Image (cartoon, rainbow, N blue to C red):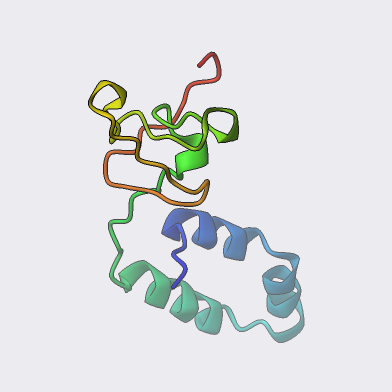
Length: 98
């Protein structure tokens, strides 16, 4: 399932040449207003962006054997490897300078 950003969608619809041309040709502002009203009243999902391992500050990358430092304890002999597209609830996006 994909999620959309409601405000962004409404702005794109209002600025769309397709909508503008429809209004010029048909003059049916009521239909467009009805569609926009449906979108505005539709329930909004509280979604959070997932941080994939490849983008996480705790992931060592392929060079370091795909090891997640958050879930590994090298001194205890525990090495937890993950795939680049894996993710967990502790993922923190890596900053540009990391």
